[in-house]
Amino acid sequence: MALDLEISLSVAMVIYNEEKHLTECLESLEAISSDIVIIHDGVCTDKSKDIADAFGAKFYERPRIGMCEGHRIDSFTLTKGEWILVMDADERLSTKLRNSIPALIKDYRYDAYEFIWPLYDGKKVISDSWPFKRALFRKEKMKYLDFPHAEFTTSGVLKRENLILEHKPSYNNYTIRRFIKKWIPWAKIQAVETLKDFNKLPKVGYHENDSWSKNFLFKRKFPELFLFYGFYYFFSNVKSGGYKNFHAFKSSVMWGLYNACVYYFVMIEKCKKK
Image 1 (cartoon, rainbow, N blue to C red):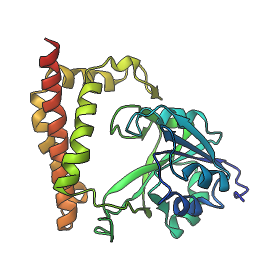
Image 2: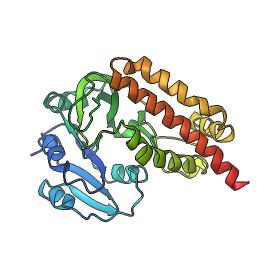
Image 3: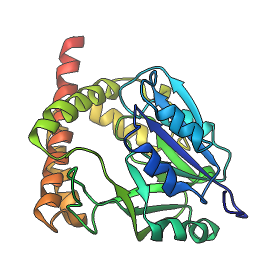
Image 4: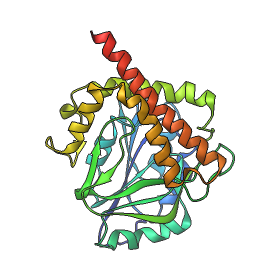
């Protein structure tokens, strides 16, 4: 049963055949919210819907895209709460985080929170205090552009909390094989999206005269300059904590390389259009 909170909380999720993880994820949300929205990316072919139904979650199938982006805003629209907790199926709330959420959303000084999101290699946790992930937002202050790997943000006040949002995928996302199989296709999709009319992309909390549009237009016009953006992203990650151990450093390298790949593929796509 959901807590009788003065300010209501909803959970928004986008998944794809996640029967291996979904039960533990939803168990960690018990007593936190009764308004759980799950968007399935394509036709569900495993037991994910049955698991969602057992926990009283609202389950919707949408056309297959291959990424969470494209479904996120749909999931937000279907929520009822004043606050939204954005979760993935392979994530779960630590006990301390779960117990802290009622107090966090009752604190009117803040409008969004980010939590420690430890790296996981499919068998064990490989970082302890880095990186951080933004996951909890006051709905009316939320800002989000439905674009590959776009970062959630807020027009209000963001607070970093040293509480753990557990992330336990069944594989190691930080290997060369995974980078080639998963990250490179992501980069190609992001490159195609980069060349679209950004004012037509679904968005929450953004306006046409906001600086984000000028930023994207500049990147689209001069992608060759942003081949070096990967180095900036790498050093930014290292500065924020990516130096703390070998795995954190490797993650920083891979995210830097990913961003360089995006703008390389933007260049390729622009050449195709000529």
